[in-house]
Image (cartoon, rainbow, N blue to C red; front, top):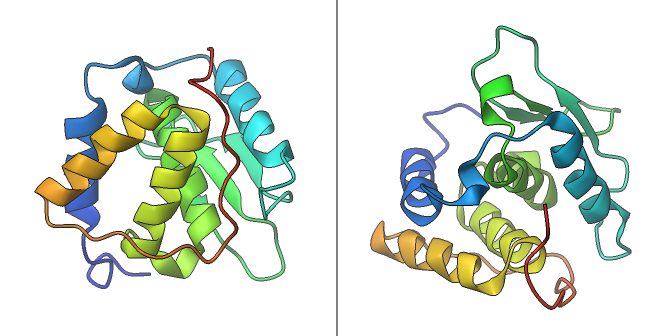
Length: 155
């Protein structure tokens, strides 16, 4: 998807910063910690894409990405400076919503679901409020409702 066609991308990034900047969600962590959270998310029966892969980006990469290639499992590549919980949840939301969803309403629904389920309801509310502040709508799920996890993750 081209950046031009990805309506709301810059607003999503701004909303994420507003919601999470200064919290532990934006703290750079060792890859192994991020990998543990990734394994927790993709191993629950609710997660629809058990074939997704996580890897480190090239050493010269500045941004993280979820890649979708025909006939291959989606791959999330995390840049060294973006080894954060917030970035992992962002990239997992791309996988859950589908590569074609960009940063649109379906992506935002996926990110809110993942945040509420794996980080906490309060943090999902921060993100939802930030989305509303930027005039960003939330789409309807095309997947089943995520499980209730009973609180924030421990990292």
